[in-house]
Image (cartoon, rainbow, N blue to C red; front, side, top):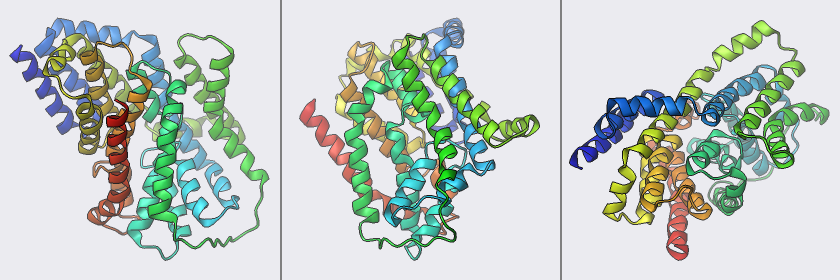
Length: 397
């Protein structure tokens, strides 16, 4: 039994250290370490083979790999510029909405897409406040976006439908929006100046391209029973890419160039690595061993979930450890929806404020602020949100 614990903590150490450089490498290496100590080299290879031949998991990985391509297409074709330049809304709404809408596209360094819009509209606001507005509202809508990797992947790990989880997540979404308004937007004067007249017709195609994946995914899965459902998700994102390509009159050589520049293989490798780790974890027997320790669920699903995401700056890594651990300890095949919502929000908050969060690191220089000032400016609303989640868990569970 002692050797299994050595393997588990060695795997966690590998995840924490290597994830700072390469998350996919960390997940694969962590899987190997955990597997060798628990189920042996042969068992590890067999587990890997089962994962790599599971159609639903591979389709999900490739679907997530299409998102950065779509994001880069929207950027290079001018669709994002059309969208933002022709919005006519209040300053407070512009600051939040522009960051949130662009945040739906998981593009590498994507915070720099919304940063110029926020900086331009924020005027004389302190740099760290503009920084936090960009980070906070860029991510808040991801909390309920049904086919984004941030939610879809943890839901897959928990073996629940994202559409069943969203009603439980929606109150937390409203909470984060309210906290963002109270701490960041409330005292901002609502004045916006525009350099040109609005052309509403130029909003249509960008909005259509962005909304095609979730709308197509929801519609097809509602009207038809297609298995695996990840096939619908893959086709929905691919359809949006085709529409963006045709609308932007992108040539095949240019599309190929964009696809290479978006580096979709990085996203695919992360998701595949995550499923490899989860597969080994499930077969390792660590869930039963952890259950024997009788770790309070609130500690695992709130405190540890938050800390893992904070220490690694990765939602997938925290979800890959916490959710399978809970399922193994509880002897369940799927996570209760309410508990999933609490766990996911805890992970989300840790990720949001993590110094290793990629969006934070790429945005500091742009807004000309320091990490210390930025984290301090974001700490208040994050702590309030986490305390509310903690108290809610104690009241409900």
